[in-house]
Image (cartoon, rainbow over all chains, first blue to last red; front, top):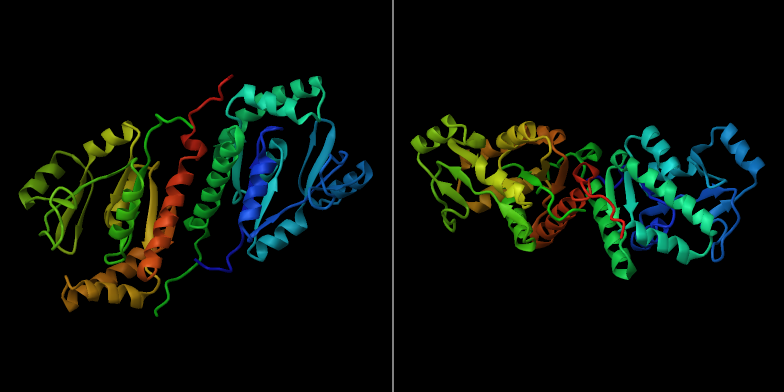
Length: 205
Length: 205
């Protein structure tokens, strides 16, 4: 109702390989009011990634310092690497009325859902387990054993879906991505009409 | 996730003259899965209304019988006339997986919100009080005194907005109606992804 209202903290999560990055990227491209929160990570850069855009790549020591100083909204150890979301930029942008998108793994998402009950949380599901497997295999960044670990983790992660506000399916192919994107867009739009965020009064004139 | 899941009970309310009927009609026209719940009323038919489509017009005695037999999901006395929603058709359609739209006044809406905590409730706001006044005056179905009564009631009704899930503004002109309709459509879509409605499992294949 009020253009200057606080932004929405949007948590997009789901198993490794489900395509949350792809869906999130489409959302960001479609909406000028969404800021992306760049996570820090101790893992190495993947082909095609850009430092400061996809992640901030830091050392284990730097990560430990951020944690110790309480500067991370969430952090998680995923498949042997540390990931975290610096808190200050998130809060600054929310205060400016920007919506902030966090694309994070289910461990970190649970922390944010607990610490920020006003966040909007969305879990991205694969259309089938076979599909998730073929996406992980197709991406070719993990060994066979790592793929199996990710699939085992995914089966546990899916059990946390009831903690989230919404669950959407990212089906196979471009139509699947498009549908998941449109679902996410409807969620972001509708959340703006939540009366819990309603701060406006009806003007006399 | 699951096509056969139970439908959504959608409560659309707001002050007299705000245009909830117009916005609701556009939603119904755009979505085959939405059923409209035809209310009963003891008020007379207005020009352009169709019995059985806009309302079922019944006598005071018939209304009293329905109430006594517990056949109404909600009922309200609004500006001297009784209105009510027969419960059985609503439940039948929800069970069939249809979404059911109730366009009801704020008194009745409060009853449904209380009795059916899983309903999705949307309050339609005017862009300004001056605008609501001119809509009521323009419709020409009420005396000057009745317009004043409706405006006084509207100021009380707006205080119940926090009870609703969502609030949308129906601004002036066709663009206003279009925007309110699209807001409502986003709400209905996003509610389908609520994890509280999520019943599906991820298939193996």
